[in-house]
Length: 84
Image 1 (cartoon, rainbow, N blue to C red):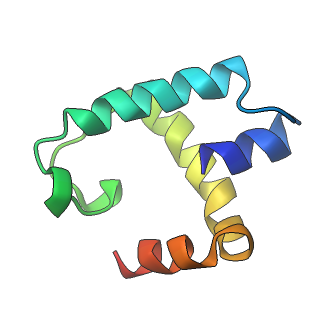
Image 2 (cartoon, one colour; image 1 turned 90 degrees about the horizontal axis):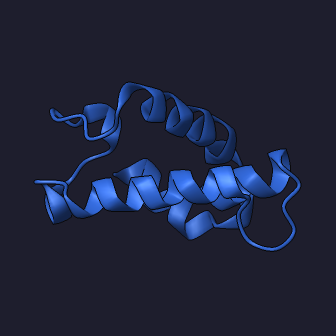
């Protein structure tokens, strides 16, 4: 989702821009430390918020933008995300 957002909003042609790469690294670290791991639901329904408030808002912006566009770029992943 961050890749879709960065490519469309920041016009990044080769990988992620610096800001999006920092957000990706932060999200990856937080998910590695998540106490729910495999049984994790979507973050909206999670009882424990792993992200700091400012990063949570950044992730929300990315998901609001990239979520609907996943249907066209990654239909199988979008379907699994909807099911989850």
